[in-house]
Length: 141
Image 1 (cartoon, rainbow, N blue to C red):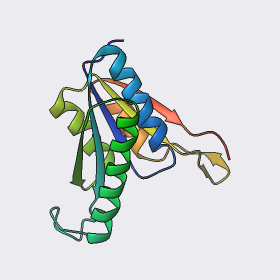
Image 2 (image 1 turned 135 degrees about the vertical axis):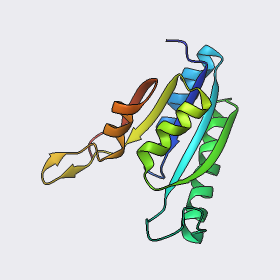
Image 3 (image 1 turned 120 degrees about the horizontal axis):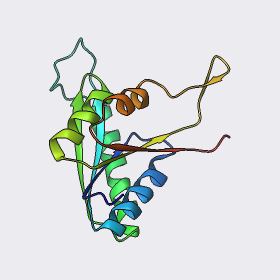
Image 4 (image 1 turned 90 degrees about the vertical axis):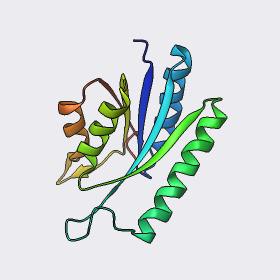
């Protein structure tokens, strides 16, 4: 697998650092470009372009940290903030628009009702992505 364009989705979770490192390592070996994206999920009761200060501040911090992690890996990245109704479709749309060959996602280890849970974003991306998807799951606590 030699991707030309790698899309790394970050969310502010514990898995973000490892996801950025993995995306950069895979991209560097293939001399690929890396695009980091953070999606702000906007409630349907608000306009899609609504400015949500608390979310914007969090997103900027997460993206700034992700860029620092990438620079430690000697990797040039482009980082973007996207606002959308749903995170999964936004990630898939970004991958399509950018012609990504690979999407890298992180997953905290979560249990819901006593069972391991992938949440709703990862199954959507796995099913709808136009390219390969790599998931980096955090270890159990």
